[in-house]
Length: 579
Ligand SMILES: *[C@@H]1O[C@H](CO)[C@@H](O)[C@H](O)[C@H]1NC(C)=O
Ligand SMILES: *[C@@H]1O[C@H](CO)[C@@H](O)[C@H](O)[C@H]1NC(C)=O
Ligand SMILES: *[C@@H]1O[C@H](CO)[C@@H](O)[C@H](O)[C@H]1NC(C)=O
Ligand SMILES: *[C@@H]1O[C@H](CO)[C@@H](O)[C@H](O)[C@H]1NC(C)=O
Ligand SMILES: *[C@@H]1O[C@H](CO)[C@@H](O)[C@H](O)[C@H]1NC(C)=O
Ligand SMILES: *[C@@H]1O[C@H](CO)[C@@H](O)[C@H](O)[C@H]1NC(C)=O
Ligand SMILES: *[C@@H]1O[C@H](CO)[C@@H](O)[C@H](O)[C@H]1NC(C)=O
Ligand SMILES: *[C@@H]1O[C@H](CO)[C@@H](O)[C@H](O)[C@H]1NC(C)=O
Ligand SMILES: *[C@@H]1O[C@H](CO)[C@@H](O)[C@H](O)[C@H]1NC(C)=O
Ligand SMILES: *[C@@H]1O[C@H](CO)[C@@H](O)[C@H](O)[C@H]1NC(C)=O
Ligand SMILES: *[C@@H]1O[C@H](CO)[C@@H](O)[C@H](O)[C@H]1NC(C)=O
Ligand SMILES: *[C@@H]1O[C@H](CO)[C@@H](O)[C@H](O)[C@H]1NC(C)=O
Ligand SMILES: [Cu+2]
Image: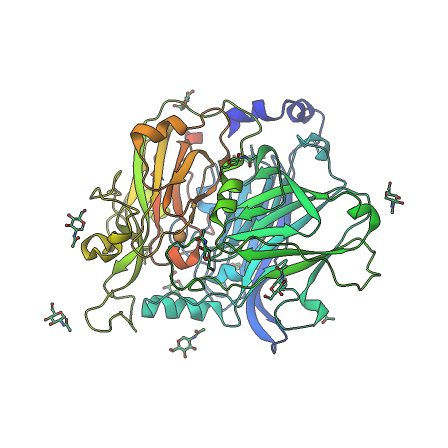
């Protein structure tokens, strides 16, 4: 945020006067069919940008203008979201389908233009429609204005982008259509990937199925790690190495030493790679590996959502010469919540004293899975039990979010005609107070039941919002990665069980809490976030598991105009897609 920036990097700011003007970095994204063979299967067609998986990495410098011409050569409706970019003054470029724009139809195109101002680090981009982000994703790196010497940590010699993903042997759009029409969640992925490749443990010995990082001895590396998986939090390790985390979600952290990185969908982690004594100097080959973190407690089918397999890449210091079997890291157990929580709760901001202390709007919001009856979307409804049964639904404060069909929410806001598009009654508290995380609520049909709606919470410009996110235990306790568009927020506290205002406010870190755009709310627990609504527009807040978002785990903030033209919604760009 602009006003905190001056505190963050005095050195970088001092250099601004002497470095070049902000540049325009321009890309063309041709989104289309790519024929690819994975896991030794025969070639299949996926949707990808410029024929690459992952798609191209966008590299910009803080203050630059990014221009991306997106040309939709795919057979699907398409949009792209720039995950973590504030989009100040450019709300029409945010990208979630039907929230800030109608999709670009097959054969159409749209130019996304935005400035990357007041933020730097590792972000990413992905499709924001259907499940297409399974293969339409890539890194978005914002370098400091003063160059790499402006990093507030020892400058690494080199940097590597590490994008983690999930792979299905099926057409992911068809998986999405089936999930929507039947009301039954799509099955879990067939593999986890590192930079698009599944690695050596899927019964396919083709060396081209494993990404290789060729590192040089005695050089230092920074990994820019992105979890682009659809539905799976991941444990990430490199054998015989540890890490010093220096940033998360493009916000600098105090240096944090760990041998395991935990990263939920939507999150990023920048970490210096620290070889064990002698390792880099002696050379050798080491596995980098990811396994799922399955947070579901009391879940009798542990692999219901996650595939208990691992994705690997190879870290090679031998210059490609050695063919010895790489060392394997010892991974945590798939349900090691203690390790996940240790990592996710211990990060702190590098620069203290930036939290707004006065709160204007308090919200207490439940989030989790529940059920609903088949609706018009479920043209092949498969309720369980089959007669008078229910299907999966997820909700926030018992409102199960559904996208509007005919007009984007931002366009409705801008035109001032919201009837039939959305309503302004997203509640500040759940309709009923109950024991949110008790096992017995699973059986309470009334509490578990939810209805579809498109509700927003309207905020006056510049209000400071505090939101308690409370997990519910209707289906199972689970860690939901809650992502907010348009802002970063401070994570003041997190814990397990039900949030208790009388005792838990004492746990708030108001000094140096981590700042993020995606918080993994602890399983069967809660997290408290705070942000300043100083960016007018329609900002989606949702679970970054597509399997949950798709069943309604989201809501939208409608942030009203401020007092000046600069703090008001701009008119839509002339090429904004029409529905
Ligand atoms: C983006 O940056 C350019 C160049 O610095 C500037 O002219 C423009 O007004 C900025 N746009 C917004 C929306 O801030
Ligand atoms: C983008 O769409 C416009 C309007 O349909 C069209 O005139 C133009 O040729 C398209 N550009 C590309 C690169 O496809
Ligand atoms: C979608 O459902 C149809 C009908 O049941 C089935 O034939 C098809 O295999 C499913 N597709 C995927 C990708 O699961
Ligand atoms: C390896 O896979 C890439 C796509 O990931 C492909 O472009 C390339 O042709 C493959 N190379 C070989 C030798 O199979
Ligand atoms: C790396 O450092 C070690 C120990 O200082 C040294 O023995 C080795 O020659 C160096 N390797 C390279 C490639 O510079
Ligand atoms: C990956 O899974 C395979 C099969 O279960 C196992 O043999 C291997 O040790 C695992 N690798 C890592 C890095 O955990
Ligand atoms: C993790 O799962 C194992 C079974 O795979 C179970 O024995 C253990 O109690 C679980 N641990 C936790 C913390 O739930
Ligand atoms: C991290 O958090 C855990 C609680 O989850 C705590 O016990 C531990 O001391 C913290 N610090 C570090 C450096 O891990
Ligand atoms: C389903 O609901 C209808 C209407 O409430 C009721 O008449 C019918 O008996 C129910 N069927 C079953 C199998 O419960
Ligand atoms: C469901 O929960 C509500 C609220 O706590 C309670 O009033 C109701 O009695 C419960 N119903 C059942 C069947 O337990
Ligand atoms: C927004 O709030 C901050 C304090 O939080 C204040 O300094 C600033 O003047 C406000 N801006 C407007 C336009 O109200
Ligand atoms: C594409 O989007 C339009 C609305 O802009 C919608 O009418 C159409 O049904 C969508 N097509 C598909 C295949 O979802
Ligand atoms: Cu979720």
